[in-house]
Image 1 (cartoon, helix red, strand yellow):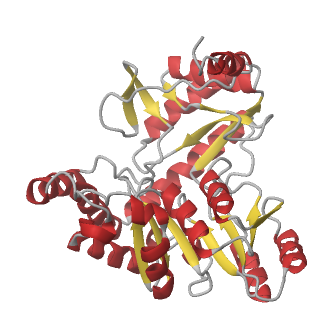
Image 2 (cartoon, rainbow, N blue to C red; image 1 turned 180 degrees about the vertical axis):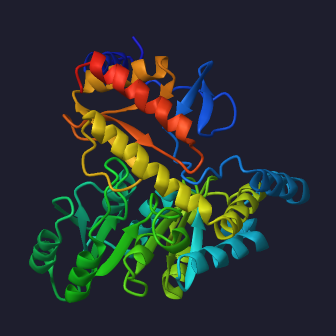
Length: 392
């Protein structure tokens, strides 16, 4: 018997509970319609909000950079892996976020986890929304700070936790997602900022699903609420609306310099390859030059969300292009996803531990690229399958 054979039993348990994840394989470029596992489907599973992941300008920028600068950098940033294009992308991302400076990480996950762990230690406290992303949770654990969790979107509870955990010389961090990735709702950031300012706490926001989606020109949740200069740490990602790969921290210069010196993912991971950096810069150009993409995204969002609600599906608290269809039952969510795929719509099941037990769903995300015909076809499939499964 092998030392890891116990995992076979655990996998069998996942299967029996409807929690086993089966990945589908993308067989070509991602887009509003894409090919997965040999089937052409309407793609409602991608974070490619603005339809940039396969944009010709970005493809060309990536190809040119690879030819001119190579496939990789060969080093971490602090040794020999910082290129002029890394610096330029950081300058431009800071400008995009209306922040003093910005720093690129290898992913949004490492940006979150690495920053929380770098700016706090065991004497400090983190006050975190109940539905914050896993990267925030992991960063909080790595920091060894005390962790307090407040009920979802409850500023009064956050206020109480900051009051009860205050100690002389103790740093406090209040942290929230901007847009919550499984429910698609928006954080009550104005109230949270007031709470943070009242207690002198650090205010941090994970804007992964809001960057490129909310605010003027897609600047994010801080811009959406007009709170520039009042949020200390903004996390961004380059893998969602930007359409490529990587993460960012935007904030004051001394924060960025500290992370250059003590942000462990930044210090111990090879820097992003030239093709990735060049494509990200091209994406920022496109967002500036083609504002109609953001308008189309929100037009499609309103239309599709209304269509699902008119059919009688439970879409929870969604306010953004992320619209869950909540079944609560794990096996029913898996079956809904499976039958939709057979009917030409790809929207995978989301089950525990990604969401709480009893909150299973399929998660739909519309993009700027979806046509009226794409969304009409998807809604018709939802109606057919939903009726068959007794969901509507």
